Image 1 (cartoon, rainbow, N blue to C red):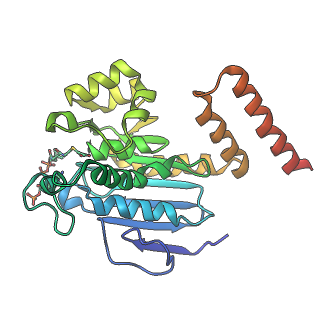
Image 2: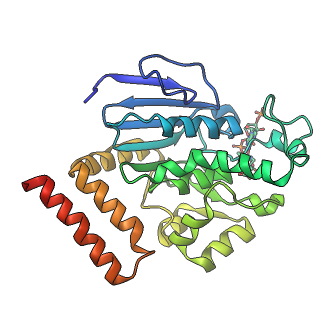
Image 3: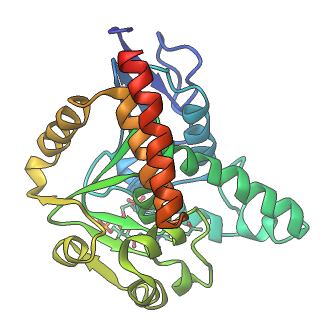
Length: 273
Ligand code: CAA
């Protein structure tokens, strides 16, 4: 297992031994079984662009096999203030266009771009890893959805979740609607999204958006403690268990029981065969 610390910037993760120029406003670091993705544009409250999402997708594609836990965090006072507001201007984000330019594309082409962007979020649910969003301050729009893309959310007591898209005439399209409904239920998800109101830490904890709320200064330690707990279990058993848990909602009790049997038989064979 590679123990060497590998720092990568910009999500270009093929070369794990060198620092890459920042692209997409991300920093990426691998330390043994732990990978950390840092949104690293604090002066712009870690606003996200298409380059951010491509970079996230590239990290997912080339995540070193030994990684078991992926932490997603934001530098500075906010986790992420969502999509870069320059997208709403005629000039857009240099090299990445704007919503005005996107509106000239045919529907299928733009849908394809959204699908590509979503790849940056979807891999965080892989059974082989556990992803943890460490969230402080604002998590707005794409920022909220990035936190929702992770398996667990450990939040600072100043957290402010906000699904702002409907207030801007848009829908949340970065994979956030399904986990939101699954976590808080349909009525609460409608309440949160269609009012674009802020969900503070106490409510986030109460409705299941957050697993843990800590004082801001304790966020990093709380994440480290959770990582230690997660790494204390057997890697293959953890993967198989996550697979079971993820499939539970879609299966009947009988199907789920059968799936448990299949996974356990494989475990017993691997351990004692
Ligand atoms: N895009 C680009 N720049 C942003 C930004 C964003 N989303 N959010 C903040 N910034 C910039 C500000 O323009 C400011 O830059 P300058 O110093 O150059 O002026 C800097 O970050 C600091 O911002 P504030 O001074 O506003 O910081 P604050 O701490 O007082 O407020 C905030 C923080 C409440 C997050 C506020 O910045 C804000 O409301 N930002 C916009 C949030 C937003 O509407 N995001 C879009 C969500 S919808 C979405 O994400 C759509 C989607 O997925 C499709």
